[in-house]
Image (cartoon, rainbow, N blue to C red):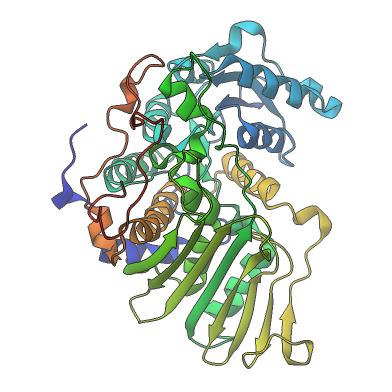
Length: 459
């Protein structure tokens, strides 16, 4: 697929789009007609990518509040993952009547996504929970099939795939498809409430936001490749270890907080500078840093500081906040979008300064479930709902910060948007036995970022 950087969306055009981020994430124009209906008005689901997050998304889909939903097809490159996912979903006896995936609708291989989506009709939902590098491949096929989509974040890790996905997002909007993206902060009721208060001026103009995600290593990228395992299989199974497959831990871990802070600011940053390093990696073969600290700058000069750390034995810190000219806001009290959100007069978040605190009913506190309830509600009731463009924008901004740390220089929004660095080209032609997008050296180590040495690419 050819790219035309001159015709791609500019930063200014991106910034104009930020007002589209709303509580229901309704980005598109008028919606697709009601679901395909059939005899019983059941929405059918195909799960493509059967890891932990895909399995969780399938369960959320089956538990929606808005009418019958049925899982009818599953697909993964690896049979063991598909089988494990199927058994996990089946354990919930309350969902047994909604699971109809016989052996002939379980598909394995790189073309499995097509076979699974071929089991659906226009108006049904394809779920994409594979490593992000495959998003543009799968999304393009879903659009051709007229399918609604739910796809996990992040959506891209570089400029070329971001531009490609933007074109697909525009096409999905023109077809009036419903598209959900797993940036569940936008469906966290407390964050929806605090965003409204911030946009109404309760804490004044935001001048500084801070996000923290600091904990021990939580992904299994440490073991070396097993004898006889192909490079492609290894890198897909350990996708958090590789920038091409996931954007690394930076993109996969930090996108939620970066995204919802930009939502509060109602703007995307224009540049990022950052630092990071590998302190304790030693024999680890992945491409990640142990620590990251990114300073994002917004058009009005406001700042977002995003600090991340994956180290054992250090103090765990995991929340986000905003400081304005009139007050202070706790965005997520704990986690990516954890209750409660709150606002304060002055800059000290003490109870004596409390202005407001969110109170969310227990049944509305699961933002992963909320995003599925909102998506299916939009499908059934013909409501505008397309988060694809916003998901690409958020992924691009996250990659901008990651690249700043990995190269040791300031990276602008326009630069990464128009970059020619594609980390996994021709991914629609990948095979298990073919070459992998990145290869190890003679010692089994993969290239890692070297700030100040390698400065135009991340490795």
